[in-house]
Length: 324
Image 1 (cartoon, rainbow, N blue to C red):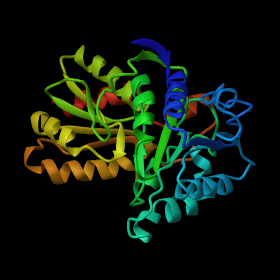
Image 2 (spheres, helix red, strand yellow):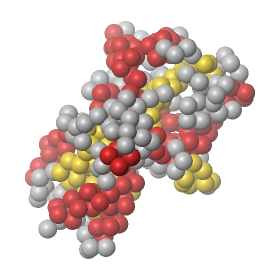
Image 3 (cartoon, rainbow, N blue to C red):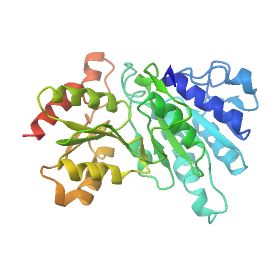
Image 4 (cartoon, one colour):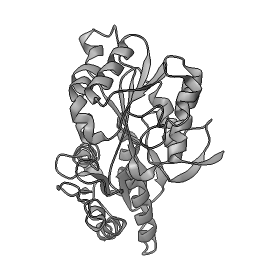
């Protein structure tokens, strides 16, 4: 068991995986000499060489397409997309190629690649560099979507992603890179595709992922001071989506809140809420409540940015009001 940061856990996961599997290569803008825009790949060029850690031109369509081709040729590439906001530039390669090739080739060929990227607010990076776009990828059959919210999951979810036979969109939250936590490299919190109950409770279920996990846990502690016990579930992956764990909790509590940083309209919270409604209708005592990002471009001003997404105070108030 070691104490480390989210950023360092990601780098350690890549290093350990590259030591074990010579087919893993990294490609992206500034991943080599500079060590990655967020410092995750620092030192990997010196350890593994320029044939396995490749600085690409500034062309998302180019290097994501190259990663797809490399995966078809027997490698296991990790493409680093500096911001999830830039995924639109490479969406044909992601959604029409990587996600579809196994089906189009009748199962004879897969795309075992990981698209590492980051999203979310917290650095006043403004409207073009602060979005939470996981819902885009959730709508594409053939893509897996992982969003680690803890230091342990930063390591273990990335390791698990690098063992998948199909493409994984791995979204790291920009505000979590300096978060510290405990890591046991030998023991994951849960297996791939399984959610984790981060805080047990009996009165209401809060379903969330990524940075909103921290907010939900803080809100649950606040609510507990007022006699309300909330159970907090960390989904960890949106595809696969672990409805078994979520359903078991909602069946027990009878109430559900879904918290995401992504926009409210058409976002992941809508899909998760609908699935809970379908699975747990007979056990729900109250309507499912969505707490999500505002349907606005993310402001650059810190005071406006922080209130464009759910806050601990808002989540606390909703928990208290739902448990009447």
